[in-house]
Image 1 (cartoon, one colour):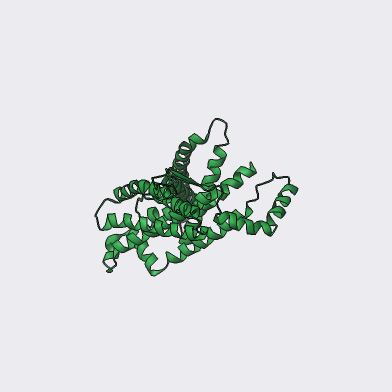
Image 2 (tube, one colour):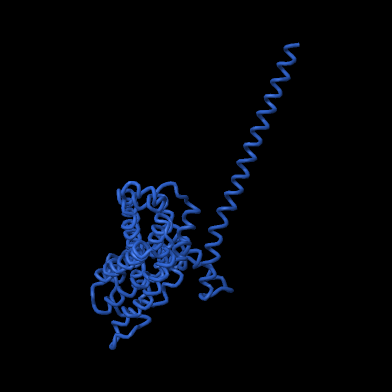
Length: 347
């Protein structure tokens, strides 16, 4: 059980980067960007292809981020300059990326024909390089020895992966917090709230939308490149439903932790992604469910995350109304008592 939760936390931390990208478009820009399903695979495809060609994993990952940014900018151009509906522009880019991703992975084949997947079983990745450094420090053995002393099951020696991803996600989270409070970040937030208002201040909303979509898909592609290196393969079907996973993470986090400040909201999104992976991992351990039910489980989690907070809020509102009603009745009864006393004293 503990091992399953540990694995879910590992993946949840990586998916948190994608969830932050989805948060930027759906919550900050108020833009339903379905490019995510394609740009996630694009990040994985670019990173895997470059790693196969013996590029350093860090260079491959940075290139994947740039390509993801470019894909998001194209979606923004389709909407702002092409005057295409936001939802449709994302769908069009997602469809285009499906073929582009096949071409990118096809570069590793002899005839450069489209290829649906790339294995990285014998290739060095960011995680394997950092894990080797981490293992040389002997920290994995110390941690697992401590867990064994507590009676917990032995875990794979991947603590280095968790530490690396926590550091990366924390850095990205604080950069996002800082960026959203800069002049450009505030303008992007204002564009999502009210385009007409921000235009009245002579701001170029088209540029802001393109920039926001570019940053969002850069984060999504970054997550895709890390997932490919973590799972040791890139596949053209691995992006299916990514937008739902991102939305589930955002909704779960916001429902539990709220959205009062930017710091709190981005933290909620990160933790929401981890919670989502843990719930999904534990659900798949139920005997009547298998890996083919993952999308169904995702749908149920999202539905629950949307409905349960509404039910709880209705109950809290009902309790508040009852409390206010009781207070009014108490005030009326006290006023009635004072009236009786005053009437008796006047007689």
